[in-house]
Amino acid sequence: TADLSHSSVVDADLSQGVTDFGLQALAAAGCGAQLTSLTLWALREGVTDSGLQALASAGCGAQLTSVTLSRLEKGVTDSGLCALASAGCGAELTSLILRGLKEGVTDSGLGAFVFTGCGAKINSVTLAGE
Image (cartoon, rainbow, N blue to C red; front, side):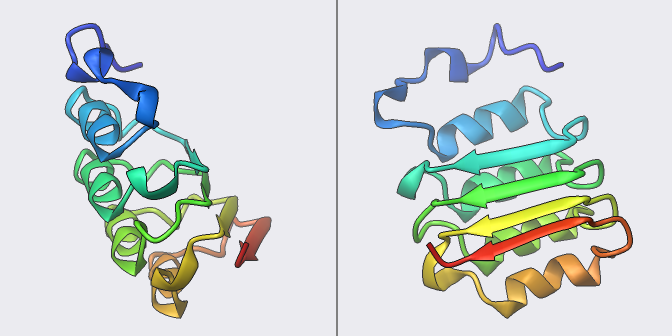
C-alpha cells in the first residue's frame, strides 16, 4: 500500500470532490504499479485525462484486472483511455465498465484497450452512454 502520510493529497480540500490533483498526488506517492482495480465514479469534471495520465505514468495499468470509469463527464476522452492502455492496461482485464463518459470517448479509446490485449481474460464489459 502507498504511504500517503507525507503526500499533499492528505491536505487537499476535497469539498469540491476528487480532482486530477488527488490522482496526481496518489501517483507521486507511489500508487500505480500495485493497483489491480481502478474505479472512478461520478467525479464529474474534476477528473480529466491529466489525472489518468498521471496514474499511467506511475505504472498504473499492467496489473489492472478491473477498470470502471463512470460519469466523469467531459474531462475524460480517448486520450486518457489511451494513456492507461499504453501503460499496459488491457492484458489482465477481467472487467471493463465505461459509462456516461460523453462525447470524448469513442471507438478509438475502446480500441486502445483491444490493441493492448484486452479480451483474453475479460468476462464482463459494460458500455453505456448515460
